Image (cartoon, rainbow, N blue to C red; front, side, top):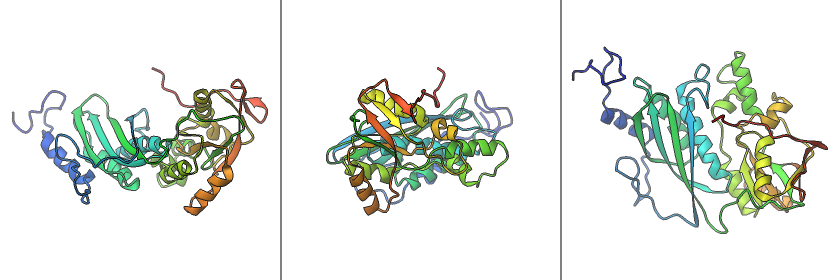
Length: 318
């Protein structure tokens, strides 16, 4: 086979890009130079990691080009960033420290894999969690599957199932920024608009999650699919209800975007000691969480300002 007689799926005349050459360039993008002593990251058949402290947490997310990010509005690099950020946010939601990331990519021939992995590397750097391995395959669509590993020392991870009647419900920040950013981008806003950045480059609340775990909160999860859906899920897991007094909307976001927009990755926190939570956040230089309501015993009670709050938010139609 010569350089222009590509394998099946590669148009005639396109140069063949050899897998080893691509992997070498990707490794240069995502590889970390200061690998801890005794660990082996990218380059072998499997990564070698030092023992984890306390509980070991594992979570996997998949991001598909054109499904999780509008391919007509955003660069491919952003898909890589969002895929990693969403997966790492699942660790933040349980109060874990991120330790390692494994990334598997499928893509059609000709996809700019270096651009995609630059976004992956940016998110790994931003979350201080190294890429330690992964896989690459040809496929019909661009899809990024991210597996994250983390650790929870001490009393362990914070679950969704621990909310108790009388607990306060708090959120780490105003909601709706991501949904508002997508709306604005669709009407011509630039990629550098702050709300657009919130959509294309979300920030996992890792420090806030660890602080909340240190405050011995009862339950926690991230707001990935919309508060009006995720809070129902938390209360389902805990067999309780809720009464909300307010839903703080970010500047520039509508009330509906704050309720059901999703992809904010703020942390939803339930605790019986909000003063202790505030103190620990303050001691670590973090903004105090915002109180939005309370947990009630009747699991059928799911209200916002006295009216029933229906489940609504992002769900795949499978």
